[in-house]
Length: 562
Image (cartoon, rainbow, N blue to C red; front, side):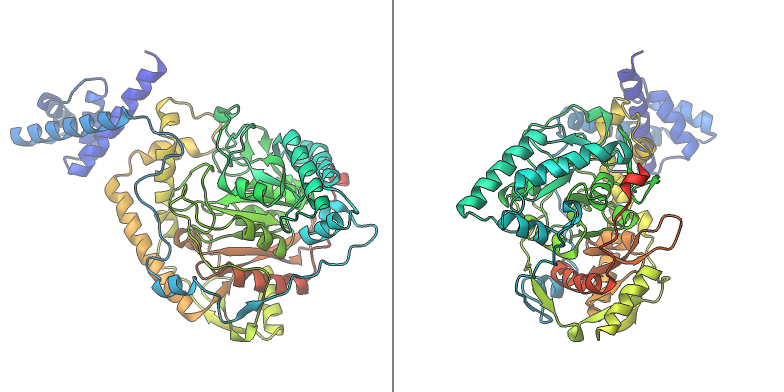
């Protein structure tokens, strides 16, 4: 029998198990026996049910047998009707997650400028030494040189393409160089700037995209060999917005297969500070490339730690925005209720400038919204309530951030996060949604080299719809509890909250605060989590920490590590 039929029998057996479990008929042994009996048959009969009773050592009445057989057959017919309809990977389900649904006060405040912020003037670029390395300058510094003709966008683009080629063998962070597209964009940027057309601070600046974002003319692989050659015709909205801002895409960067970890079909992406170590994931290539000075900034995505974790591992600045702040159109779906797109860079302001270009509602992503955001802004710390989490250990890097804020006169108060909820049990919702997105791979038994996903996909066929919806209701309780936290504070530092805040949709910024003293010294990062859609406050506070911490001048030694 071919693999297709074997896979079909296996799926049919699992579906029968689910149906009988939902009906509450018999024991687990009985359900397995029925499922095995009907896996290769066109229909379930009362006689099959009776034979399974003998195996399981139970007795049902004739009416119960008939009812069980009819129920299973009815569900399978409905299943077959649904399976007969083709559904593309990017098709959305008929629901959407709303992080503000239990926080009406935050929904209202997110529409306007917070009272502790005021408009700021464009921040002057930091002084540029004559011996400065282009590889590690900020966006504003590069922009200054572009506008005074010290360097051209074409020169910048060629510089970063060369670095990507040189160090990719060490870091394994590049899936595809977009050289032809990049040089055309750079030439256009130089011409426009020369003619007086300035699209803003990103005009002429090279960048890299996590390779789950569609770019016409180039493969979009999702880090999986199954999609290695696949090209998509419609650009991701975030890519299109950066095109409109004049940014120059130089590379599509690695991600762990189907957005898990740092292992993809090209190998394991490495931490540039310690190449013996993976860069974490799943925005593995984005983090490694930015930390190594191979691109000034990159876009990553996060469902459950995929921006925060590699940024902390590689010692860089990053922003995971509020759910819905940035459109996900044209980006691989993993979890419709948790996926988020955000900037990764070496400076807080760089993240702010990128967010300013990519945020906003998009008709192609019904979860995306318009909420207030402005940059630059200045923050009055005396009006802010900053939380110190007292029911989770405070790391050295988080303590350093808190100390800076206290030294600047901030009001730091103790607060507790809602730990009564099993956050990683609730995240079964993520696994169930991912198993639905990639059901066709499981059905075709095409799951080789997908990290731990195959086992997750298979087991999630045994999670009932009832259990999924129960998890969603517990998630609602968690969202209510988190909204109460933000009645007490305006943001908090640390807390080990990657599970909680991803489930509730709150934004987090990662900021390097200390240099770790170890065999492989590198920046270590604090995390700050804020109110829904209040990225401006997070960024303004993060920049104050960054300026005091003064760790951005330290860079990985790629030459000696190579």
